[in-house]
Image (cartoon, rainbow, N blue to C red; front, side, top):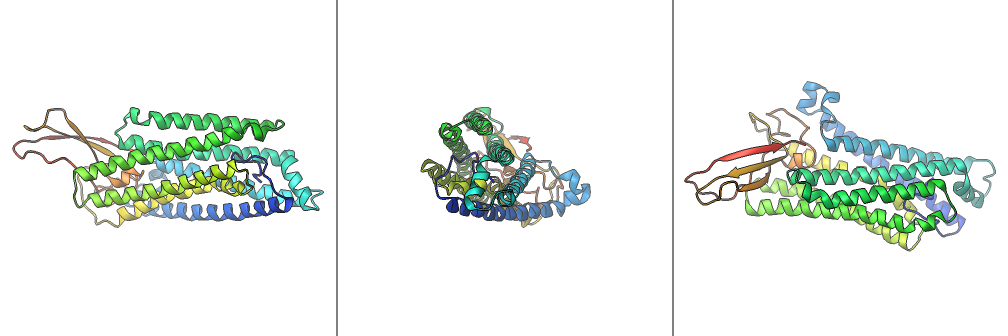
Length: 361
């Protein structure tokens, strides 16, 4: 199993302790993967019973959102990672000459077939982290109306994540002497970059939504703020996991193995729970017929006697679309698509006009 994963160097401890950690890894990853699987099928159930899916068919309606595609990718990655964990674990016990704990641990570190499986898991973990960071960067890009300047920093972090992760994967795959000691700093940098991306994007998303709601308070702002709470909670879980892992890695404790093994499934849990909690909240809203559905971000341009022409106010029209749910239903009468939030500043009632530009996910 992933004794030498992307986040691990040669861990200390007796053979019995290391074997106990391996068994814990199997249990924890299976638990996390099971939770992710339940949440993913719950998401599929909601999609299957949405009005648009009923009319067009599940296959035609699924995957119309980048977030949905990312969740499906995370499912494939976590399934493959978990399968390799099980294969490696049983191979450690059932191989020839594995009649002692020390022999099992030695085989898990030196067997060519197991090392290849571990290298594959390293790549899967890296890809999962890249997909998870790409999702939150995409949300930031949408909320800031496709403003590239706001995503330059997280894109740089994301590129650094891929470069450092690829270097670690290649070094561990080649398995040169003292490879784990030489890549230890690169491993830390890899996780720090991912944490920086999460903190940066979540902070700017929170500022955007909070500022919009503060400037234009109303009954509908509550739903948008509730959606923001879901995002912040999920980001806090993932960031805390990364920070704890970084500390464990720096002190070279064997416990880091368990944290590293659950990355792919945890990313799936965090992102799917965001989707589900928003979808359930939106679906619970009463239907509101709309002649022309809107999703994503709307820019409302208001010209007034007291306001300079050309001034633009960014407003979020749909809390669901903020989290990748704009594809839940395209039915104008569907509650999933019928929520629109507009927060214009107080305007002079003498003369006003508005022009909307909508960006779909």
